[in-house]
Amino acid sequence: MTTNFHPPTPASERIIAGRYRLERVLKQAGRRESFVAQDLTGGSRVVLRMTPAALATPVEARLAHEAAILAGLKAPQLSPLLDFGHADDRFFWVRPFIGGESLAARTTGPWPIDDALAIACRVLEALRALHESGVLCRNLSPTNLIVPAGQSPAALVFADCGLACSLTGDDEAQQKSVEDVLYVSPEQAGSLDCEIGPPADLYSAGAILFELLAGHPPYRGTTVGATLLQHM
Image (cartoon, rainbow, N blue to C red; front, side, top):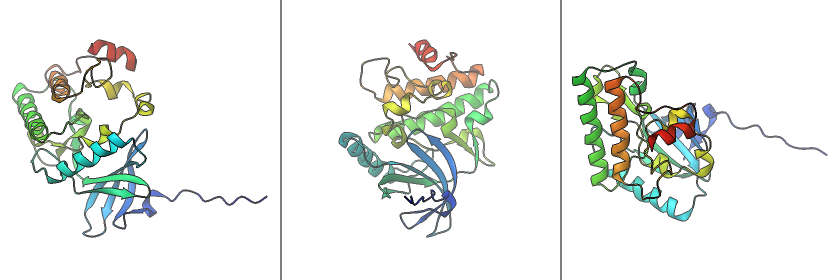
């Protein structure tokens, strides 16, 4: 019996939606993948995120609703949503590639108070723009806050928000690390039986400000469960 084996296509040879040539894997998290890609229509580098299209109907409806809002949202603190849609039975969304460092990489101890407050104001301004549009970030952590190359930390940009955590399922929750839950609110972690709303984002922002001033997150356990318990 002969079995035809077809190896997976390398990322560098894949073209999504006839427009985006994948260059390299940026991150893999559960069912989601992020790639650095080239936009063949203009040559610019972008970040393309993909996830399975087979989602629960309410989740997919929220995804489409949030994507439409984010595509029209113009705020200097937010990386714009350039494109979104379906390709290869998967949902994808595209944002510009931002050269620079994450706030996590820049934080090696306590920040000067003036810098910490300037960063906090930038984060809160971004959250206000999102919340006034009816969208939650759900993914607020120093790893998703990028300081563009050659600019001050007060010019940081939200690299991703809203859509990523609209897609998080139970299987991904089981794969989380301690680093993933350092800034998550109790209700977002499922520790509280209440609706997730803007206060969840504000909780995460407060945890980030604490780290900027103290040099370490407010809570850190040896396991995911121990860390979540401390958040309670």
